[in-house]
Image (cartoon, rainbow, N blue to C red; front, side):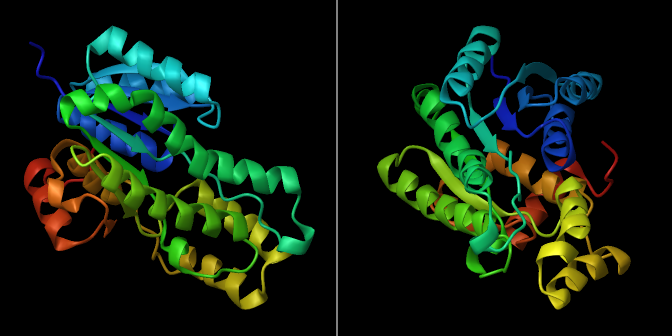
Length: 264
């Protein structure tokens, strides 16, 4: 029987998701990569293979259940099993006060950040159960904060955390948890720096600008290393919890497996 771990990673065309896929490739895993950007997705898939892993590229919008179901089916067809899913796909738009937010944009934020993880988990549930698998829902510190002008994002991530708790109760054989990845130097932060000054209070917009200026944003490879370790090895006692990527219980074992170097 094939013992290669098989993991589905969403939002895998760039940033945190691409870095997670690459760490998994370095560990020799088989990775299904899901995102809306096919060109970048193919580049990540090629990189995973060069690192020693296997990859399946699947262009999809996770807000669509049928697309998630097809991705799960294709993964089973290619690799025969699903050991874990990393629900990383996310957006922070709209950056707007609630009273001025576009209703369609606000709704779509929840469809990607909250409904997307449900869709993939629902599509892969039977396969994950067979493997007593792991589910990593990438959340945010914003889940616990009331941040002006990013109400949809805060709300979606708070709901994702509680959804994860309910999932852990309903599926006791799975290991399901949410993770705070820190403030990561990705396109999401770039978008906040560009759009924040138009919609946020000046001190809040300045905070995001200063994070970049002071070099306080984490390289994606650092939280991605923790996520990859969790997808492969997270102990069952983590189930239902909201974890920090730099918790010593995670960071230490991840460093032992992948090493200090951020070269991926």
